[in-house]
Image (cartoon, rainbow, N blue to C red; front, top):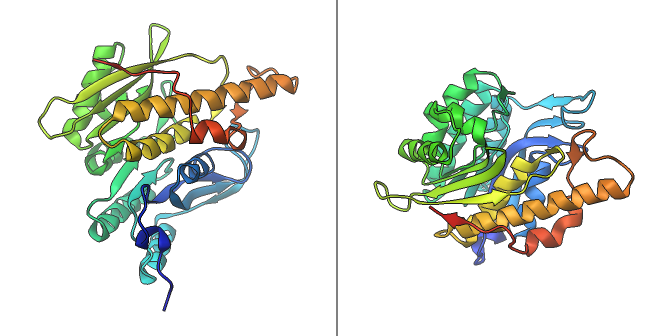
Length: 307
């Protein structure tokens, strides 16, 4: 007889997360950027790697493997056979094919059958700054099939535009995009970065009861003159972690997540400068391990402003 899963048997204020994202041997993107922070925040995390690459694709070259839908399902069946498929949260990030995303939808159904209270946090990783980096046909699958089953959605500006068909050029547009996404499914929507008039904003919205006006807020985020990888993956993980602790206060969860992320990015820039490297030269690997205290106990510097 297999031993019990202690993270389920013993009382926990956090939970057990299945995280389906990319993985790199070197650097911090996907699961490498999400698993460690969630563990610091007290979660048990089981990662499945949608791809396993030597390094992220911003380097001159990379090598590795891509998991297909059948291989994902094999892992799920292995877990189920051993009664290991009870999760409180599902987290998904970069997914590179329609077949894999269709299998993820089957995983959502399976996990919800086992635990109807499953929280599904979806970062619909499709592109940024006007450019898709997944096959175009994935957009329709996210819009029509994934958004309706998500509990929380964390798109960036470009992804929110693709999911809603709405151009976001004002704060009002951002709020309308949140309304469209609420109507499609998720009760919590966080557009993690919106560029408006050279200002960087996060806009969040929590529809606590279907049909009621959502609680909406924004956080003004300082621009750091550098380009980082893995920040969206880290942000979504932090939002999952803190919104679990503050389920009725998405604005508080976002304040903590933003403050953690900004501390990590500032440390990253400072450390590259200390090494004699110009941080504006190329994309930077975030200093995640060195920022444990900022993840565990962030100093809340960036405050939410309610609409």
